[in-house]
Image (tube, rainbow, N blue to C red):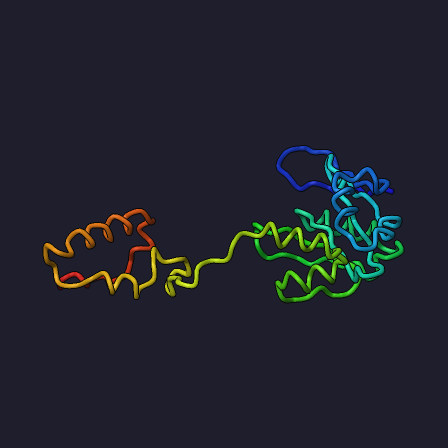
Length: 203
């Protein structure tokens, strides 16, 4: 099954053909096979080829309560929705429009996914296995330190209390410590060093 989408461009381009292929032809078939807790849903999945790359559309079933397919344009998203309409496991296919240019539109099916960005809730919703989720959590970067800049939301060079303990009246005994502090702060980007209010220019 295929669908043809007209391309709107100042150049003469032929219509874009979107094809539905067997699931095993999808580039990410093995990724889903190792990720899902119930691999039987792959029997009803299909590969959708946009341009030259077929990607997998996995239906809902078992622990998997819904799914999605990302598209770069609304016209392609409407065509993908039409191709999935009526297929087993792809109940209520719908197109979610993204208002942001750096984010794709999404064709969804099944239940409505969690609105929060909780990795545990979303992983369970999409039917990820416990092993796959554990591997995902192990690959996450370490959390940010407790001390962070309240203005920019980025880590401070070091906690304010540590800086205050290092400061004191300038004298030969603590000049070495002050020089060390200036060296450490200089290792960070300037945006992290804005600690004092900017003085107003004279009128």
